[in-house]
Structure formats: C-alpha cells, structure tokens
Amino acid sequence: MKARGLAINALIAALYFVVTAFVAPFGFTMIQFRLSEVFNHLIVYNKRYFLGIVLGVFLANLFLSPTKVDIIFGVGHTVVSLLITMYIARFVKNKLILMGINTAVFSFNMFIIAYMLKVFAGAEEIFAFLWLILASEEFLTMGISILLIYFLNKRLHFEKIL
Image (cartoon, one colour):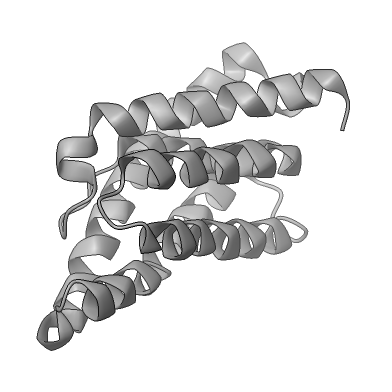
C-alpha cells in the first residue's frame, strides 16, 4: 500500500477511534450504540478501507473497552462482516443495496458480541435477547447512516480517494 493509502487508512482509524470515544460511556455496555459503525459502509466503496476500519476497531477496543477480550471479539466481528460484504460486492454493484446488505451482515453477526457478553459478562440466560438487542442497535445505527454515507460519497467520491 502506498503512503497515501496508509495515511487515509490511518485517518479512518483515528476517526473511528474518536467517534467511539465520544460514545464510550454507553458504547461498551450490553446496550451498544456506536456511531462509529458508520465507517463500516466505506468498504462498499473501496475494499482498501478494510485496514483503516479494522485498525479503528482494534484501537477503540484496546483503549476504551472495559474488557480487553473485546479486542478479539470486536475485531473478529468486524473482520468477518467486512469479508462477507466484500465477497457479496463481487455480485452486487448497486451501492445502496450493498450498504443495505452490509447493514444486515453486521447486524446478524452481532451474535459474536452477544456470545462474548454471554461468556465474559455472565449473561448466559439472555443470549438470544442480547443478540436481538445488539443486532437491532447495529441495524438502526448502520441503517440510518446509509443515506449519510451515500450523500457524502456524492461530494467526496470514496471510490477514488484510495
């Protein structure tokens, strides 16, 4: 990756971290509302944003999460979800539809975070409920951000930045 690509990915990671820090008081509980999930949609425009998004998740979980196991599960959730979306992008070219699919993938895969909470936060009895709540929050956050990213792309051209 060239210096420009590294710099842009570093900026994405930094923005992810700052936005996550802003909501950290309620972003790392059993109810997770993370505005920084908006950056996950960048993968729809260019797969080279992968590094910046994953690094942002890693740094946010490393420095902000009360449980360091979130580094493994949070990063794992992001990597798996991004890879699935990147694969689907080979077949779906419409960016709005692909962001909708990306939202569904990230939301469904919240079972990974629910499992982490089940095991490490002692929430065994409410796994299905946690998964539903976490998936709903992810769906809401990423769903609302579809139009934001879509219209920002009209101005910024995310495909061409990297």
